[in-house]
Length: 329
Image (cartoon, rainbow, N blue to C red):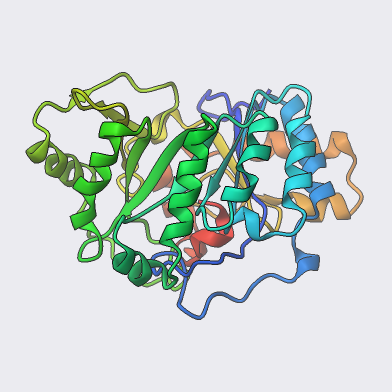
């Protein structure tokens, strides 16, 4: 079992299968993109399956596949099929931008995937282009419709950015009136691949909630699921829910139950910290299952108490200079 030094059971893995993405969201990467990792530097699907099988036997119960954008990596669906068959894995979910996802939704349903996080920062096509530098909103909405049609739970993730999409908060909330979706507003984080983000956050979780409450004064807090990163709310008469994620404020860190693997194979015990080990290098150096388990136990045992401690301990602050695409945020 994976237990950190604060006594927290770690049972959730976020696995980034690629650093590449078909959007160019300004808060994630420069317009020209990134210096993409060479294929030989990425973990192979076989390596991912191996480390996931080891982690599941050590207590990982939930795996979320992220990127970059996972659907841009070739042979992604066959990998997902194999991963879904890991004995002991209780939940397999995906985070996607939805551009390429719609045709695969029926297959996702067959694999038993019950929940998908869909990134959607605006419902306005012009603002979508301004944020992502791509005119792909219709394809994202097609994915949303397909997921709902196949009764797959949808969580819409919207990063709130001052001067960019704060006018979209209420239209996105309005989706919950007739759709059984959870719309979750996320504080902007500093991971844009350029290391030049501000740290004085105006649109924090308090400001976001106050904006929603002005329009919907009957919004009510509902109990949050164990280990939830979002503070969740109901609006009377709405089919869906609203959530606010204090991703920069980091007020939910105390109950953290997750670890991350980057496409390079770097294990991160906190989004705001540096990588603590490279499982790909360890496997390629010939480490057997026992050695891999021992290394994972040692790494997880050193997990920081919260994101502020992890950021402080990041010696060269490389974590904050990274792009979200490279760390599976």
